[in-house]
Image 1 (cartoon, rainbow, N blue to C red):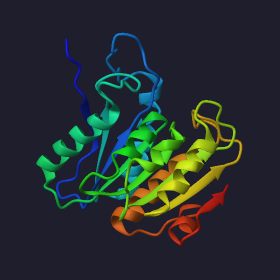
Image 2: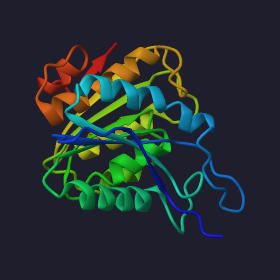
Image 3: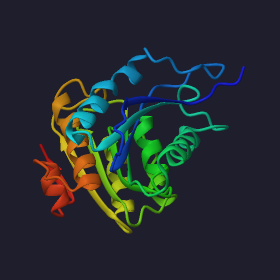
Length: 226
């Protein structure tokens, strides 16, 4: 049986001014295991999606994407699932609405690598699991990018995400927030991760005012520690 990606609506106002697509992480499993809505990597993104929806105050459509399979399968990566989701969103709302991609772990990598798709205005990568070479395979010119990474992450390397951020900075604006004491699950200092994602999404899509550390990033600071 073929697995298919699925969109889960968090909030869909009648006339949204922008769209946020929230992407989960999660390690690979054998035999292309189908993503479960109850797996921890998926559940972790629920409060982030809800926080963004609340901050949007009825102006943003917020969806979560459930990938077709767990992990990063070379034959069908989460990037393809994101492209499918963006096409679905485009068919529903038209091509004029700006989109922000918000992803954690492998979802953060997918957000970065799919950030060059038409309609994407901004990208938030939370504790992204990346390869150093990722920064050289995608051109995010014209987008605004935020990377938020805990310095105690032992699953996804902060040093690798910093390398990717520097590479992307050659063509676009990239802010990098270091969360002191933060780990991969984003449970410790979770409010910092959640609020950064929410503030950046609403600021880049709606022009709302942001709080620190996103305020500093939008003001042009490349690196902020919190």
